[in-house]
Amino acid sequence: MFYRIALASSDGVHIDRHFGASDGFLIVEVTKDGNFLEVERRQVKAPCQHGYHDDGAMLEAVQALSDCRYVVAEAIGPGAQKALERQDILPLEIDGQTVDTAVPKIHDYEVKKQQASVAY
Figure 1 (cartoon, rainbow, N blue to C red):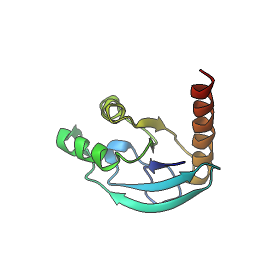
Figure 2 (cartoon, rainbow, N blue to C red):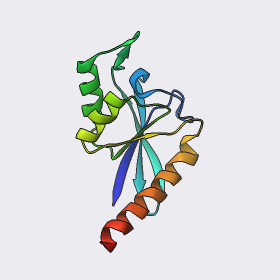
Figure 3 (spheres, helix red, strand yellow):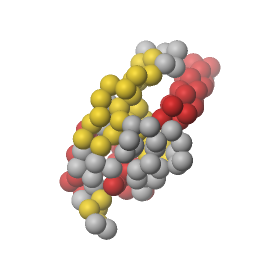
Figure 4 (cartoon, rainbow, N blue to C red):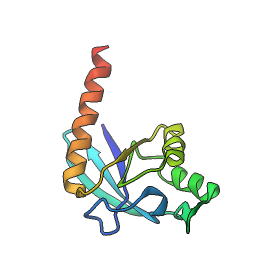
């Protein structure tokens, strides 16, 4: 089992971008044991353009991340959250953390979520 996480990061180290302002996402692949590896830097058109949201760019960005289970940014607006959730992508707001600290926390959540679904 593995899954992917898209992280809004300007430098590949810090989660420091708002979803709507991000023109690229670091994509990591997480294995069953929690190890993760950067697989690519995926470019998208930033949905937020100088104070207004471009619905077409929002849809394109969400579709470009459709192979990811989670999208992580320092902030994600309600419209983006709904668009991601419609594609079964869980939006997470994590501010002030690095990729190396956030991904293990997300994996712990993923493991607990899987255990809960098996228990019921």
